[in-house]
Amino acid sequence: MGNNLAVTLAIGGLGLTGILGIIWQVRANKARRLKAALDAYAAQEIARMKAATDLFADREIARELFWRKRIKARARHIGTAAVKSRPREGFTPKPRSLAAADGRNR
Image 1 (tube, one colour):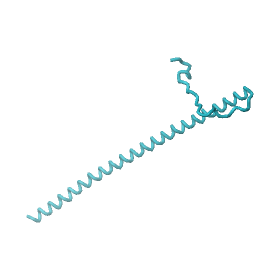
Image 2 (cartoon, one colour):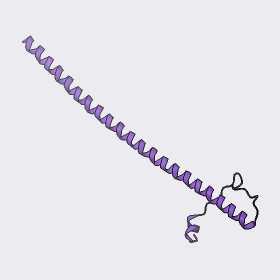
Image 3 (cartoon, one colour):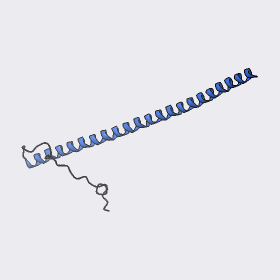
Image 4 (cartoon, one colour):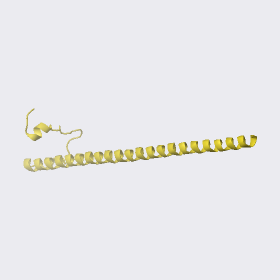
């Protein structure tokens, strides 16, 4: 009788250990998948922000080239060669509204 009880308890302990191990594996896999999903999302957001930053830098370069070209054209028109090729320090042109660009008045 005592031998049967020991075997039953040993089998129960092994079964409980197996169940707890399966639960632990499932939770570990879920955590791993969540971490992978968050890493992928973070990489996607970083790439999106980098693309937006590059676009902003491209716009700034285009704006600077536009003003240089405009100032040189003005200098040729006026006939002075002493005009600087850069806008004055701290000068940034005011952006035009989309309504003005479209020709609509709001």
